[in-house]
Image (tube, rainbow, N blue to C red; front, side, top):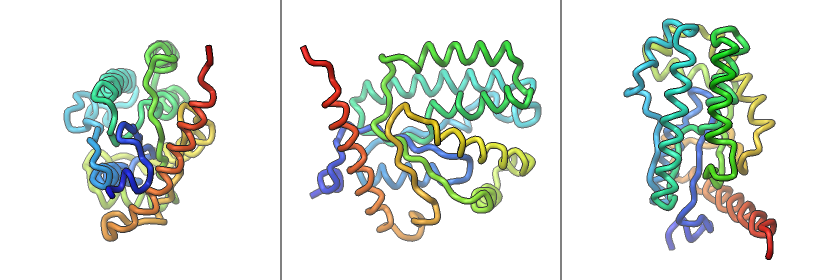
Length: 228
């Protein structure tokens, strides 16, 4: 029996991994995809034409960066469902507006006009009955010290040059955002409770929780479908 059958995870499931920078989204994505024999969908950081400039000048490039992310994630979401599911996705499209665009608007690094334009576009593209939402969003959380420590260990130059206050601001906003998130079912995992890099077996209880959450969510949706 494979793990999909063992834990009752449908072969067409779409699971999104969310959380602030440094919590291990990519590691979780790879581990789940390998365990379930699913495809992966990763954030295209290296090919982003705005990212380096953005870290040097938030005010000048925040709107451009968010529009780029929105377009790329929308295309990726469409592709995932055209494939028929069976994907683990690194970072969600919902974080773009709920975390990053709002943070720049609140801090004055995105103008009110740009923010309103972005929000209008996001709502038209994503917040509709026709947008294919994931079966489950896995939210990775941990202490601020753990998160900042992982960022420093990773050693990406543009992240090393970013003030710690920025990561703290983002961390707090993620905590607020997930408490109000309701676009799809959420499974919260603390990064201190598993070690996917050094203990492959720690993925098993995670898979069990995923299967339970998806089964319950699909039962709920089926019971709420309109009847003729």
